[in-house]
Length: 247
Image 1 (tube, rainbow, N blue to C red):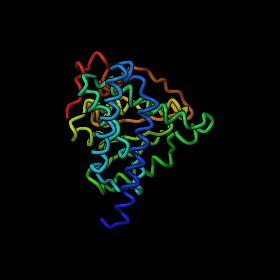
Image 2: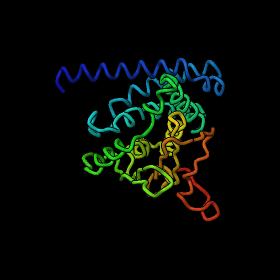
Image 3: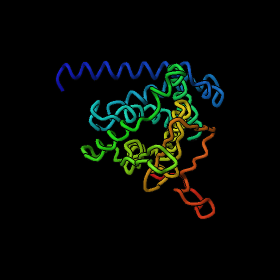
Image 4: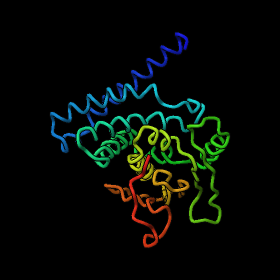
């Protein structure tokens, strides 16, 4: 790594840490309610240090050339929160509430009238992302196929058969938390005025994540999540008792 690259990397890491610290300072009331003010303050400091250690370990999937790179780059924040919450006796649901709160705080920065344009998935972008993934340049990347919605009750979709986030979380022993990260797709769809349906996710051990989008449309987010994908598309009566995802 030459000096210019090292400086850019250091500046990027500092910016990411600063952004994470600001979020923890202003948008983690759920930690205080769950653990008390004193312990929550300790946890916030631990999360920052955990995240600091994780930043350099993010797998390379092509950087800015990859249209999905930012999704994976943000995942260590969630892993840092999850690890710290578990160390303090909390649950995946407790950590999920923090991460969902973070997503909502980011969405609030986007003016409501601009959210459909800036947050909604686009057919052209989905086709581009699928083509990129089919090149399979990076082992830790996504692999997806575009689904045309012509004649279907949706506009377009994506069938994701490999997920970088799922791989990363399982490799770090945190597969049980990945469904909460998948839940963020619904949070974004609701804010963007897009209908999102999904009956399967890799996080629940299914064979794919079957995204189906309708624009405009309606998505209703609940907390705690209902996790409709846990049955992998089987009717509830035919589905076995769901298990926590394994690493």
